Amino acid sequence: MSDFRNGYSAPVTADMSVDAGLRSFMLGVYNKVALGLLVSAVLAYVTASVPAVSSLLYVTQIFPDGVERLTGFTLLGMVVAFSPLVVLLGSNFVMKNPTAASAGGLYWLIVALIGASMGSIVLIYTETSVVQTFLITAAAFAGLSLFGYTTKKDLTGLGSFLIMGVIGLIIASVVNMVFVKNGMMQMIISGVGVLIFAGLTAYDTQRLKMTYYALGGDRNAMGVATSYGALSLYINFINMFQFLLALFGGRR
Image (cartoon, rainbow, N blue to C red):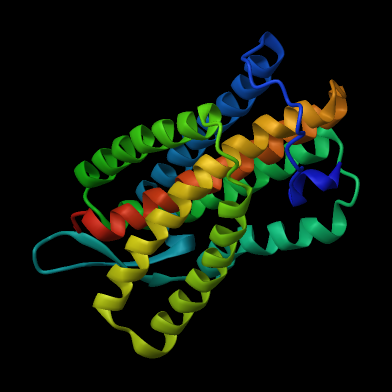
């Protein structure tokens, strides 16, 4: 069922009315996303607040104002930070015919790795701004996903454009981080990043809806689609959250 990762074309005769099967499928996706965010939040808190764990991943310093702030990453911290991308890319080659169990395992592995690496956010931004930005992201995510679910407009073309935007965003971020190191450019990148992942949230939601119709009740395929769909939406949420924090978050 690896075709899910490449997307399905919307059937011309797809029944766009709400039915119990579709509701159950989408609820399974959203429940998995919500639980994944909860697990990530707990892991981020642990890696930032438990000294024995934090010291393995982060380099911190207590500044003259008495506040402990992040100053860098340990080698293990760098590995954890970049491992989700490595796992995602590797899964495209290793998991040619994923089962519901293997797709679920991939989802929870990436959630755990991202959650562990997000302790850095707790060490950079104030708790108030982290909580406020999370709630704002949750509200925006819900609205965008609802739009993707209910709109009759085909968002397929938008998805191709947005995926190209993600590639450009990654290149621009690396260039700015390594060579330019310009604060204004980083603000622009963050603003564009919010828009791109907002659009992807609506696009992925519609794609999930069309995937449900395309699978025709295949239980294993729907189990795989639930995990991959949750992974797509989870990553969209995390990226929106991080970009919004970069724009509006109050630093420690």
